[in-house]
Image (cartoon, rainbow, N blue to C red; front, side):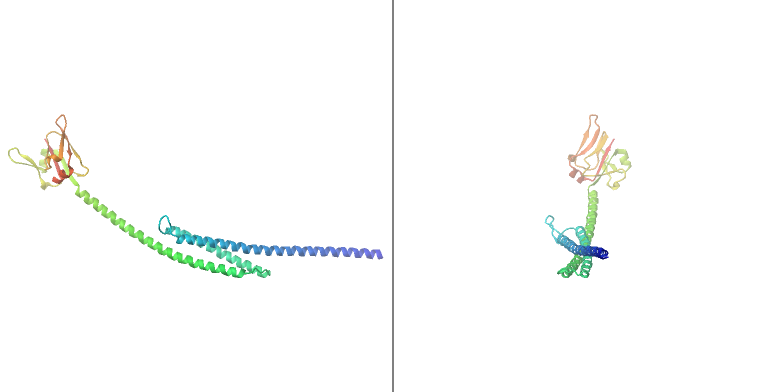
Length: 283
């Protein structure tokens, strides 16, 4: 009987010890999980703080680019580049707002877990203050950009108006120069020119041909530019220059068959100064 009782006691003792070991092991695992969870929260806090700090550094860098003066060009950066930097700063500010919200949520979980990180609350408040300050700064930059955009548009309009005015003046100048240097010539048989009342025959003995100025420039004339017209083809014998051009300002080029091949203008200024119209008749 004694041996049976002793065996029961030993068995019961073994079971109790095993149960205690299991409970201790479970408690240890539970504590390890709690510690790991707290460590994860703490790591998340510092990751968010580091990420926010990195974003703030990028924001400061882009702010410096916006207000910096280019040493190469000697003027401020183009509006398009400034707009790109402001858009990038906006994205960074949005990321920081999300990360600060995540940081506040993690800090609240740490407080519930009785984990205190010195100055965490002050750090979050400072980050909020920096975020608000950068948001205000970016709004000022955005207003400045809007003013610059308006100024650039106004300048573009002014340039467009002046360009149009210059183009109009150039067109008028070209038209005036064309009219100024416009000359007219005709080469034709004497009879046809007389019938068209372009030339007249005056005198009884050794009658001479003269230009009929009252006729004006009829369809028989060809218009040309005095600056470009250096020679007029003739291709006939007995060709005569009817209009009053000084003889030393032109040359009638005659071929071996006594055909006047062309008239060459040797002194354009004096030649056309005498008359803006050239009439050459032949028989």
